[in-house]
Amino acid sequence: MNKIGVLGLQGSFAEHIAAIEKCGAQAVDIRHSWQLEDVDGLIIPGGESTAIAKLTIDNPDPIFDTIKKRINSGMPVYGTCMGSIFLAKEIEGSAQGRLAAMDIKVRRNAFGPQRNSFETSLAIAVLGPEPFPAIFIRAPIVVSAGEDVQVLARVEEGIVMARQKNLLVTAFHPEITDDLRVHEYFLSIVEENRILGCRQLATEPLTF
Ligand code: GLN
Image 1 (tube, protein in one colour):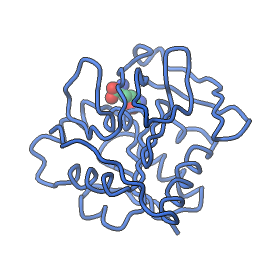
Image 2: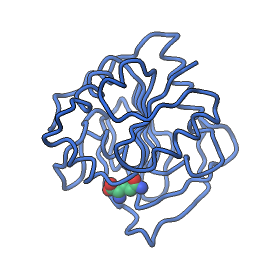
Image 3: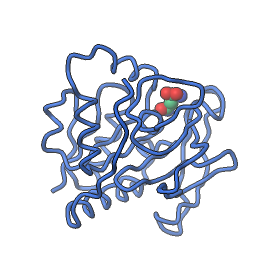
C-alpha cells in the first residue's frame, strides 16, 4: 500500500489525510524530517504561505531541505493552494521562503480576499468527463509556466491545475469536497513512479 505524507505544520492537513484514507492508501501526518524517509509521496496542504515561509527561517529541523532532496530524486508532491505557492519557483512580487521546485510563477490571492471565495465546476480532462467541484479560498493562480509544465485546468484568470513530472498543483481545495478524483490522480502518479522508477526533476538551489 502506498504511504502518503501530509505536511502537518500548517493548514488543512486533516482533510487531506481523510481523503487519502478514503482512497485506500495510508496517510501520515508529517512534522519532522525523519518521517519523510519512507513515504512514497507528499501533500503540502492549503493554509497561509507567509506562515510556512516563516518556518523556513532558523528551523532546527531540516524538513524543507529533506523535502527538496526527495523532490529532486523523484518523489511525487502535490501542493494545494498554499502548497502550490510553496512549490513555485516564482511568487509575483515576493521573495518569501519557498521550495522553488516547480517551474511556475504564481500570483497570491489572485481572486481577492476571503469574501471572494467561490466554488465552480471545472473541466479537467485527466479526471474524466464529469466536471470537478472546485473550491477556491483566497486562491492563487499560476500566471506563467515553463515548457515542461502540463496545464491541466484553467479559469478565465489563469491556470489552476498543473503538473511538472512528479509535481502536481491545484489552486483549489479538493480535500473539502466528496470528490476524490484529484487525490486518486495524485495516487496514480505515485503508483506510476513506483512502477516506472523516479522521473527526476532537476531543481535549483534552495531559496532560503
Ligand atoms: N492566500 C493564501 C496564501 O497566500 C493561500 C490560501 C489557501 O491556501 N487557501 O498563502
